[in-house]
Image (cartoon, rainbow, N blue to C red; front, side):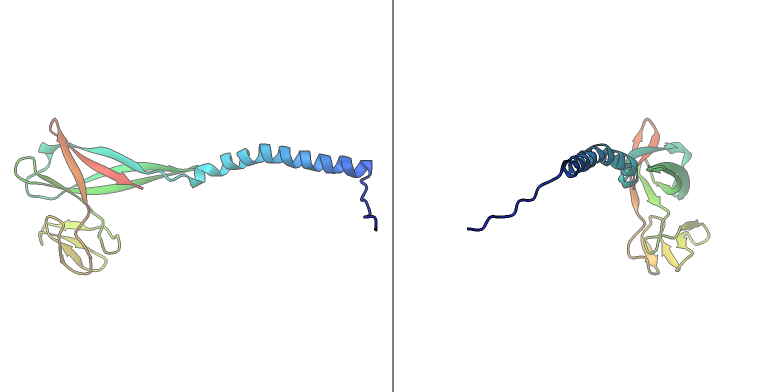
Length: 163
């Protein structure tokens, strides 16, 4: 039978190994939460889901798309971004209201109400929408996006979901 050679650690090698192990352990215990704290704000996505007040319903004329502008601020980590949104409000008889986005469904250009044509026009690729946001002509694949609306005490609100 042959004897296996035994590896013997010197006292210095043993102390160095223990110190490296304990140092790595302490570095991990302290370092990982710090790294998580530093990078976590950049990984969070904020999604707003709120009812935005557009003011008194009576301030919107009947059968005429009226723009309303509002802003929302988003915070991504340490970056703060303020975006402006436009909603076209079409008030019909009674409390029937249609609230539409001004973003073209083709490539995201901003549409404008053309009083002379009685249509929404997209300046980018000649997309046209009727007074209720339905596609008349051009490349847009679907009607203008609509917001859910509600009226409380004569005040018009839209349900804004942004990301």
